[in-house]
Image (cartoon, rainbow, N blue to C red; front, top):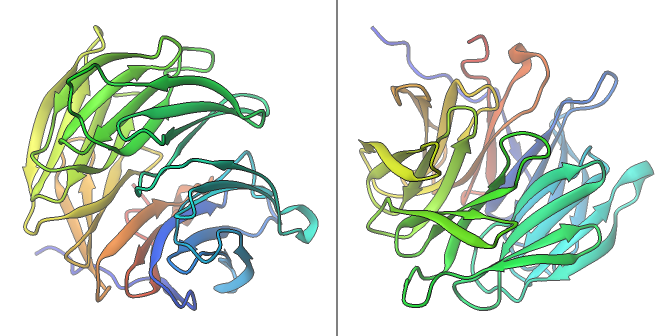
Length: 328
């Protein structure tokens, strides 16, 4: 008989608003305190101390507009956040500071999270949905220099970009962008050329979230429908449907593959977190704790596999933190 799914290891309360994004920073050497950053609908970013399970700092930089993306930039002292105030903020958190050092005005009105890629020491690329509905803009940070604007072909009718994932096969190789669009397709873009390499219609509904495993050249996406789509990338840079997986309930807000590529987690509109094996998409567990839509899921970057955690943020204003399949 299968074991019943566990309870959360602990629950973080106190955001006073639905939680839309989560990001761990746990990879530092001792005595670094493992942290979890959360972004809420009320415009606050909370920095959670995972030893005390309490908020160390609350950051307010988005004019009380929902924060839906938080990422660290090479350590926990430099933070990037994106909000519904159409701004991306860069934060300096060193030595107890809580200041916004720079910001980018995106002019984008949707919910498309930006994607960040480190390309060299102290240099990053950021992909973000642009002002013009179908376009994606790529900037270099911290210089904020425009690299290119990715425009679909005339008549492609992709709709708005909904989710983005910048990646490169190895350090120094050409950066590539995977973008999920409103019409249900996933498009692979060559960033330096500003050119679409391949397009695959994965869903009948807008692509809500995607993740990609560059080692296996395989990705996964979810939408508002009852299907997870798994697709692969061949050596000719063409996207192909690998398989689909039927879900019990419709609606996936977020998908993330664990850094070791063994398992993945989905955030469901049905209030549940689902865990799958990444190799064959075998369903492993259903984590049933939240009382409203789960908006986001994130795996920790602990260097010791036994310490690994999974966090989920929900419309119910709680963050559940789980220790699951940490030994595999």
